[in-house]
Amino acid sequence: MSGTMPLQPTFYGFIGDTTDALIIFEACLSGKLFHVPRRPHDRERQDLIKSGNIFVYEEHASGIKRWTDSISWSPSRILGNYLLYRELEKPFPPGEKKRARGRNGKSTTQSGGITKSRPRNSVPFQTGLEHGNEYTTVPSDDERHLVGSLVDSYDFKEQGLVKKTISITYQGVPHHLVSYYHVEDVKAGLLPSPVDDPRLRGVVPRTELLTGQNFRAPIEEAQHGTYLSGAYMPNMDHQYAPIGFPTHTQQPALQQQPQQQPQPQHQPQLQYQPQPQQHQPQLQYQPQQQHQPQQQYRPQPQHQPQLQYQPQALHPTAHGYPQPYGQTWW
Image 1 (tube, rainbow, N blue to C red):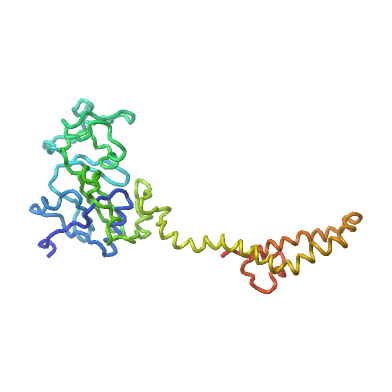
Image 2: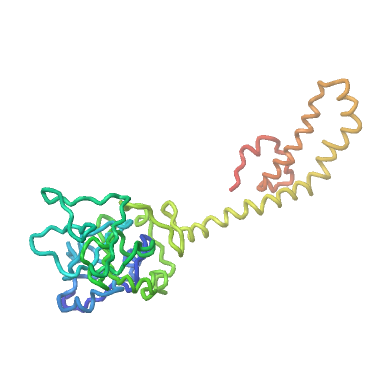
């Protein structure tokens, strides 16, 4: 039945970083978006394989082991947690290995057909349009974010597509995302981000998507929110702000309450009344009465009741020293 139904992309837009992909996966798992049940037929590919279309499929239910679209692609390159492919001007001849082109436009191989790796500090960019590369100079960081290292290593099709894929596993089942875009469409802002879609506002990837994956790179900080240690910060703000703010607002209140209540009772007894009459004569001749300096240290319970916000009983300092060490802030 699914083979006869018209196939629709899961989402239309651009997936910039890992966070965007996880939002799409979460939307599919929660029913806001839908997996595709099959690959596109030959007659559908012209309309479906185009810039902005994104397809998510679940490997077991769809039976798709390999996504095919009849386009000639370059070998894949890693960009963060994605694999990137660029559309070629023409497919590789049958039997020819897919070798990257060297600085002179020819494939560089050693004996045995092993492709030489280019030094990491070399600049692999050439004049480009003659090779189907729209970059005539070293690409910017934004352009590298779109094509990775696929700049001039193959005969890329001018204004060709870029394919960007990522996979996750949820409850033992692989889920795959395949997206297509033109570089110029992304640079011109023609492809919306998942967070720009009203259907996906408030979608937060579940913990298994954040912590249960074997990603090569850490999950990035997205512009619309930050993922930190497997948690989405906007949610953490709602959860932890009520705990954080009282710790700052209670302290001034705690300092005022002991000043209002203990001052008329404890402070006149410990500081002002004994000192003029008893402490000054005794401190000159009897250093042994350092017990009353202990009464001078008992103003510390005046600070400790400042910590004891919960002893809302009538005697905030009658509990002595054990209470502050047994108290918690929560």
